[in-house]
Structure formats: structure tokens, C-alpha cells
Image (cartoon, rainbow, N blue to C red):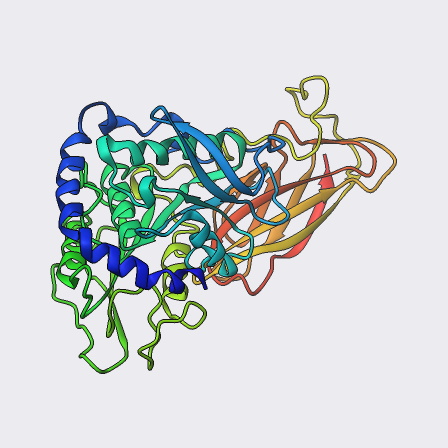
Length: 445
């Protein structure tokens, strides 16, 4: 895999300029004040439920994209999920490459192994650093992060409570810089074998944090990784501790989840018996991208936030995305402001589809179809959730109830369905998604 092949060159180059990179970090950190302190633009504000790209026919495609940022032409590789649904808010993950690596290395290695685990639930971005690194001079790489986020989210449907970043070595340093400077934008980061090389503008607000480091890292000593971790141990209000770490020669790793952290802002630390690598393997001294445990643990760390918005900005559980468009063409005239005439209920059908699941939660979608030759105006779906399941957010409909027997009525824009037309509403819920909703019915009006 590209990641492993690049390691020797990376190690040699990093050893040569590590001291210079630390000096660069000091310069970058002092230069990141002023205007960039509030550079999180409205399109990437973590308090929003969904982006302006929701409902649009996308113009962006997977592949290498060019963008102007800070007066320079920059590039990034974009991966849009197969079967992209413009009405579904997706997770967004930035993967930053290592020194002398490239965006192509990150993309070809599956974005640190997360793409194969994502089940088409995630939009991935691999930015290209200047001089194959992330010096972040005058905050230029943070501005690139903002500019790419804006371009992607204006065109594609992103859940703004589900933005993540990760990277190895210099890429880990850049992920740390994003966490420091964009705490209301980024939901969580993972830093593999990182150090403070790209600056830390701010660095006082909570962000969910996962640090991974080798106990005898010969390029960036593990003490540097511990220092980054401890920044967010403090910010997140966790109980200070000295996590257990494996002994030399054990060929194992130990992952510790800190206690006492602020709700929604965990800190996790994994130390492994190894050197400077993003892909350690338990029981072996040879790194291997396809066998490493890191990808699975990172994915579990990120995916735990699927149904959890940041506690200080959680929206009402019944509020649909603020810009959600109709999944079928809206009526050419405004929908009636008064209830449609009563009478015998019309005929419609509702079908449930499981979209995704993770430990402690799941996402579902219900298709409402008009299988008749006459137009229906307004629909109501009733369903029964299994014991322990609770709806945490719902879009493209309005629900009454979040547990047990739930009723969902159409939104203002998707209640009128022509003959053989259909629309959908979706939701996320806590609980075990193995049991689908039962007793699903649909009536109109």
C-alpha cells in the first residue's frame, strides 16, 4: 500500500527537518491570530444541521479538484459515496498526508483505511500540502481547510455535526491544528504519531480527541504525542491520569478511554509497541495497512458520534434539516395552509430501509409511495419502534413521539404526491437497529 511504501523516505526526511519543523510551528502558531481566529465561515458552522448543498444536483465529482486559497492554486482529492443521495446529510472526513507523502497516497490507501469501513456513509477529502507538508505558514493550511469545506458543503449534503479530521505524523500535526483552531467546526480528530508542527491557534475549547503513538517512536518521540493528548484532556474536562502503555517487545497496543470527560467530548489514547508508523500490527514488528488495528479503532471512535450532536448546540429532535429540499418535485403552487378535506383515507404505502448502524445507534429511511392513479395531498405514516429505540433526529417530515408508537406527517414541501410518485423521510435513533420498526402504515390525508 502507498502508505507503507512511503515510510522510509518520510522517516529520513522528518529526522532531517524535525528541529526546523518545530521552529516553523512556533512561527505558524503566532501568525494564526487576528482575522483567522474567527475564520470558521457560516457554511461550516457546527451549529447547523445540514449544508446548503442538500437537495442540489451536485456539480462536484470524485477525483482531484483544484481550488484557489490564499491566492494560490491548491488541490485536493474528493471521494463522494457511491449512490450519493442529495437529500441525505453525510459525514465528512479530512485525511491529511504525512511529510513527503501526498493526497494520492492517502486516497489510494483508503483514507487511512476508513473508506472500506464507511459503507458509503461518508464524503472523504484528502488535501495536498505545499512542499508535501503542513507548515501552515500564516495560517494558509487552516484557510485551505475552510475553503475546501465551503466548496464541498455548498455543493454536497453534509451533516455539520459530523466533520472529522485525521492524519499521520505531519498530517497528525495538521489535524491537531484544526482541532485547536476550529473547535466549533470539527467534531473529533485522530492524531497518529503527531507533534505540534503546524501550530495551535486557540487550543482551549473541547474537541473529541484520539491519539495513537508508538512507545519508541524514533522520529517524533511519544512525549510529543502525550503533550497533544493532554491539551484535550484539559479542554474536555477529563480526569488526569497516566494511561497504561505496553512494554517493549510485547508487540501489542493498549487503548485507554479517559474518565470524567465532558459529555460528548471523550479522549482516547492508544500506545503501541512500535516505531514511527501509521499501521502497526499486534503480534508483528512489520507494519501492514491491511492488517493494522488502527483503522477499526479510529472508525469506531468517529462513528460513535453518529447520533450525538455537540451538547451545547443540539437542535430539537423533531427539527428537519434547515435547508432540506423535496425528494420529489414540489408542487408548482404553495401547499395549502389549511388541512386538506377530510373523508375516506387515501391509499399510500410506506417501506422502511435500514441505511446504517453503529454501536448504540442506527439510521433509517422510510419511502412513502402513492401507488394509485390519483394525486394525494398529505400523508401520515405510523410505525412502532422496538424496545430501547429512540429517535434522536428526523428530517423531511414532522414526528409525534420518539419511542414506541410514532407518527410522522409530511413536511410542507413533500405532502403532494402524483400518481406513482414517492418521497422519503429519514431519521437517526439510539438503540439496537437490528430490529426494524413494525406496524408500518400509511394513510392520506
